[in-house]
Image (cartoon, rainbow, N blue to C red; front, top):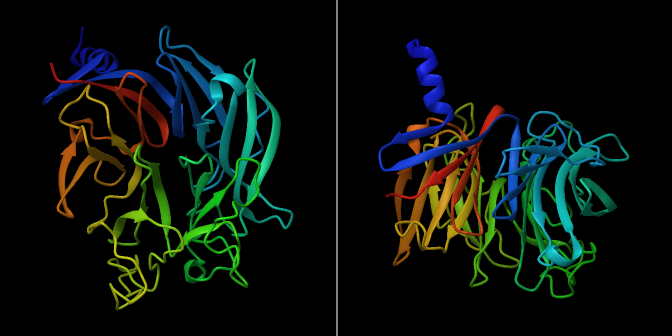
Length: 360
């Protein structure tokens, strides 16, 4: 056996570096973007080109789900997030976020509900269409999370070319949206009685949001890409303005100054910001005990730094540690299985699903 074949076989089984072993569950994924566990043995995951698939962990088989919404797969857009309804075991209901063309042939963000039955989607309904049209599918946001009261949160990115609109309440650029599962607006949303404001808006002044979680205590956290520097992690509260682009710790990709200000009255400061950029992509809060060293920590996947940032807060000070950098992969998504195992999705064509095994 030559060295190249040996190394290939080694990588396809278990990789052992530092303190963790990595099991490669699946390979050659087509721009996989998000995943969710139906149960400990079954993963539902999306691929940006418009594929929704089920992976059986027992035999590693993958099944394609049919009758998927038509998406606009271009640049950063396509079929993005999938999550389960809290009552999925009884209603088989799921939610999908994706970019698609609106009636004016512009790309925008959509959120749909559907019933998963016999490897097909039934009873599909668009429950939200963002008033955030753009020429190209960039800075979509598209992360979804359930609040404890059963309402849905959705990240709607700033569209790159429309960043100034993140400061205005008459559009969905750079906003976190809150709706009911049927698409109606909760009566206690912060701007329902504000003249000229879209009632779905929960918070504003965001850029390209990639992580969105609600912890068991009900707290909402998100992370977002800055431009060149200034990536952020924020604690989200209703009605608050998170500053973009009026305040930022980053500069434009050209080196130009976007704003001379990092602080302004009435605008929130991030809990944590990263310069240089790490390009945060997803995030979980680890509340299990299978990896005791992670318990009570945020785990933030990163595309540019090719690692997971373990973040803990002590007296409002962020402590960070780099994890899994030995994989040398752009990490797109992170999920925790019902049994507490950490799973990672790598970014782009030819992606992998990787299971992190606890320290022995």
